[in-house]
Image (tube, rainbow, N blue to C red; front, side, top):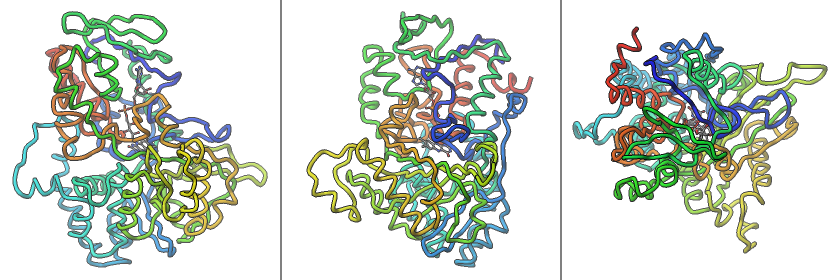
Amino acid sequence: MAGLRVLVLEEYYAIGGMTITEEITLPGFKSDIHAFGYQLANTSPVPKELGLDRFGFELICPEISFSHIFPDGKYISMYRSLEKTIKSIARFSIKDGQTWRTLFNKYLVDREKIISSINSPPTELEIFSAEGYRKQLQSMRSWCDENFESDEAKVLFGTSATFVGLSPDDAGGGQLCHLFATIAQDKGNNVVRGGFVNLPVALARFIESKGGAILSNASVIKIIIENDRAIGVCLANGKHISAKRLVAFSTDPSTLVLKLIGEEYVDSTIIKDIKRIEWGDSVFGIYLALNGNPKYKSDQEVGNSSQIHISPASLESFSRTSYESRSGIIPSDPPCILSNDSIIDPSRVPSPSAGMNRQLIKLLIPTVPYDIKKFGTNYKDYNSNPVKIKWSDIKQWYANQIIDNITYSYILNLKDIVIKKVSYSPIDYERRPTTCIRGTLSCGAVFPYQSGSMRPTPQLGNYKIPTLGNVYLCGSANYPGPGVSMASGRNAAQVILRDLGIDFRNMMMS
Ligand SMILES: Cc1cc2nc3c(=O)[nH]c(=O)nc-3n(C[C@H](O)[C@H](O)[C@H](O)COP(=O)(O)OP(=O)(O)OC[C@H]3O[C@@H](n4cnc5c(N)ncnc54)[C@H](O)[C@@H]3O)c2cc1C
């Protein structure tokens, strides 16, 4: 749109990164390998600005954004309708239902400001007031306790911090819960029809429609630098590609700085900061092709929910999982996020045929150790084995434990309807060509000192490498961080165009 010639280089044979969709269980079963819920992206102006619907991008907007199911068969849901959400919360506490109305109404007053701040480069760290300072640092538990009295409401809202690897007592979790929940209430928890990959595919088609090009199987191994400027890149296949104006990277910042650029071109404080980035907790995934509908212990209404959170109604269970995971212990009874790929998007599975009713779900455990030291309390028999425990040896066993647990307490027929199971340990996620460092999902843990303009490090918070005139960062390592928001890329574009003297706003409007 700015008249630059754009070439996108992708290491994998297909585009998509952590929004890829692949048939990893059985032919015709299209799993979103990483991201499934189009949550933060709901605040993005990008689809309209680029007219992505012309390139096959379409959202499904389910009536239930997410539900949380408990072992006693009770459940609580966030609906598109505020009144329905309040009613669901009020089954556990009328006061909590009213509090949600108040919190959501406050969000509506500030909505434009919030959305615009997500979609703009971050401002320098400012502590506006005692209240602002408290907001930035408040933990998930503190925020939940301040606002809600029922354990069910606390868990409904608290889970979103767990998704990005925050324990109930980590600083900054409260603000995250508030942001995720209000945006989900306001904009829904949508799903991309046909698979999340249809978003990057539409972006690729847009680039091509403007004369740009996409090259896959193109792994960048070095940036060629001359006179403190990037003049091109070297690919793993030996090819050199020149870049006249600039290069922008959505690789993780440590690979970018330490390997692709090289320490000699970067200030030593940046190197020091990069080496101490905390990546956060790792994730474990189970992809299940099913023949039959899951039978929930809770009301079957939750079966229509695109996303189901599974745990006891207690923040303590989240604390225990974080404690175990961070101590190198395989969590015994971790919370789990179930994404219901096919129930709201039948195009993800083969059409029903005689006696077969195909379904596809993904179970994600958001907090497991990368290096395993021992097993959790429920698995203590295994601790007698002194051999070093490797994920490759135990991942099938662990997946079976999770499925057994869910079948026993939440989805009564789950084990019986599985026709194919594929499990991904943190090592499997890390091996895929994405930014899943140590099998984490956030490309840098979302602690307050790795957020806003200090993300990924204070000197790289403005989407560029200060010592090199034309090397930019444009991925989720930068503000606003993890989640498919399209904001890191769009914010980086604003910085790039400003440096080139091109008016971003005028360009978007013309
Ligand atoms: C299991 C899991 C579940 C998730 N669920 C959700 C969800 O439901 N909703 C949500 O919003 N977010 C979710 N996320 C987070 C979300 O997927 C990420 O935050 C987001 O996709 C990151 O986008 P990115 O562009 O920064 O990085 P990536 O998607 O990792 O893109 C980086 C790209 O760069 C390529 N690349 C890397 N190095 C090179 C190189 N040297 N040369 C060429 N190419 C290279 C990679 O192959 C990749 O395609 C999830 C993440 C995980 C792991």
